[in-house]
Length: 214
Image (tube, rainbow, N blue to C red):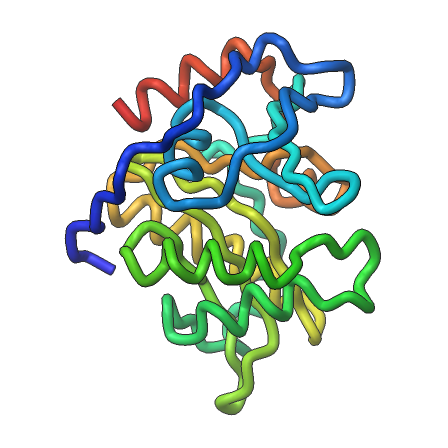
């Protein structure tokens, strides 16, 4: 994980401005999931999700959810839960993505195309998994892209209580240890708010993104 990532060929696509997003945050539809396209999109403030008829939608929500690294909330019970898990990084990346994409989960959207695309970025050194293990069993984790000081969290899962929350805490600790500055979670949810996630405007997000990736 400390190795310099492999730089892919530049994307062939012209990415639209995040400012053209509709009320739901959808900026455009199309393009591809090539490494160069994905990295350019994240640097541009966009992220992909499947759209209608197998197309790729590109999103830039306003407001945007982030977890300030100095605003992490760790309750007493969560602190106690941390002691029940082992934290590993990048030991089961594709398995974490597959578990996040379990079709039995509500709102599951991570298909084989996305699994392959992010696994490729992982192999190139850009995508990472932060994993929670118990008794050598993978019981929770999250994955996302690291570009400079940015970690763009994509999805998380858990099979036992607090396992995904512990992964979030471990991600913040990892970012502190590696000069990270911006933890993007895309959208604020009530669940994430208990950990300190807040909303900022798209304009403010793009300003912080430029500072983190520049």
